[in-house]
Amino acid sequence: MLPIFIGRFQPFHKGHLEAIKWILKREKRILIVIGSLQEFQIKDNPFSFKERKEMIEGSLLRVGIKNFKIYGVPDFFNDTLWTGKILEIAKLKKNEVTIFTKNFWTKRCFEKIGTRVKTHPLFFSQLSGVKIRKKIFKNERWKSLVPKEVLEYLKKIKGIGKVKLLQELPEKKIVKFIKKEVKRSELKGGIVGISGGIDSSVMAYLAKKALGEKVVFLWMPFVKNCLLQKNVLSLEKKLKAKIRKIYLEDAYRKFLKSVPKGNRISEGNLKSRIRMAALYYFANLYDLLVVGTTNKSEAELGYFTKFGDGGVDIEPIGDLYKTEVIEMAKRLKLPKEIIETTPTAELWFGQTDEKEIGLNYQKLDTILKLLSQDFKEKEISFLTNISQSKIKDITERKRKNTHKLSLPSVCEFKNF
Image (cartoon, rainbow, N blue to C red):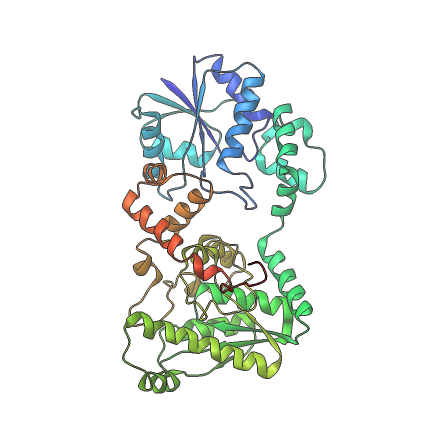
């Protein structure tokens, strides 16, 4: 029976180390599985897979432990798929392993499939990564709770500062950012384009928190019976502020009459660019900063219209993946119907983000987060059960759309 020890190790601490020692007094070798493999640089998961792996390796080797292997597994949001992937990584069947954990959810997942689960006794007074991160943030004593190797490693990678920085919720940072950028611009406030979807609703809520009455909300549907109208009305109630509505269908149709017939993409992107023009009209009229609503998933993929929804002054959620924006919306207690609405830019009838991308945002974000940690396409395919061809589609899309993230090229003469 192979013992498998599972944790997120954010960070690896003395409780983990003593548990591994205790297991190895009874077993010849151990498999250590790092969970939430894809997550890093967020409040509950500050460290990357590589950083966590190096913390564990350094700590075990320093005390003479060599009979271990370390693997990582991403979140699947499905108990059976998650346990199955761990067994696949171990190359063993469910009756050939023993899971060591004190985590109730992990225990339940493996017991459900009939795998033996044991509770190790050595987690010093409920010592956890959460407790250590909180102590770091509050400048309380914590250094004695981690192995010496971890302490040295955290100093080397500036991990202590990283934990402190990430313990503050992103919504608080965004509110400060909006205030600072509006002040720096010397404008009177901000304007947010509302769609009824989750990204613009999150931005509207945070802009209102940052700017109070100095923010304008503009909803720009192209049809009067817009499917997201109920969401916009729910958001109005949540904001306790008026959302101004202008219908752009006439402007759109008149524009199309003056140009050659286009295709679905050119005509769809035109809608986004007309919205951008309307936002800047009001921004110029009232001296406002245009607040963007593009998230990191969309930015990395180039899934936005250049000089359309990408034409803004600031992007407060531009460093948050879509799934992180969703979690933020839940914390902000935005209306349930907004959080559960299928993401769409409404550029043509029946258009949705996930249809165009070919993946839901949970899977897309997992791929993007693993790519950013230098995992290869083949590795990501194995870890996620997503076809390599689909992952290649994502990497190609990223590569082809990098131009959207750059300023226009300038022909320079002074350097010739």
